[in-house]
Image (cartoon, rainbow, N blue to C red; front, side):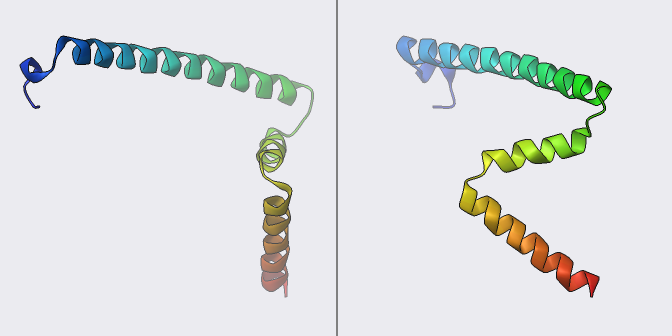
Length: 83
């Protein structure tokens, strides 16, 4: 399998298509990342704290029970170190 000649034509074509698809998706991902950075920069210009916005976005991605668990752990840990 180390030799490209051992691959059949159909396999080679499928490999090329797969790589091209990954490359397209990577390019789209880079564009989206740039768009997201732009939105955060815009939010910052309105006076929003971008660090907090990122945290809110992260928390909203979580299931309610996961978020409650994270908040409970944070409260527990903070209580332990504040004493």
